[in-house]
Amino acid sequence: MLKLPKRKFRLDFARDCGYLSMETSNRLRSDYKEVGRMLGHMINHPEKFVQR
Image (cartoon, rainbow, N blue to C red; front, side, top):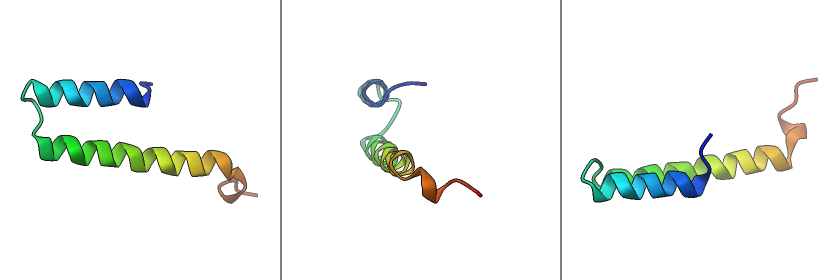
């Protein structure tokens, strides 16, 4: 699994090479940040996600 900084680098690289538009790059970065926040919340509050 790639770490977030590596993903950001690859998104920037793909954008700079013309594979992604600025709009798509920004949307993907935003999506990655949101997923990171959700995973962080799940890690910090596992009791909300464990079935009993």
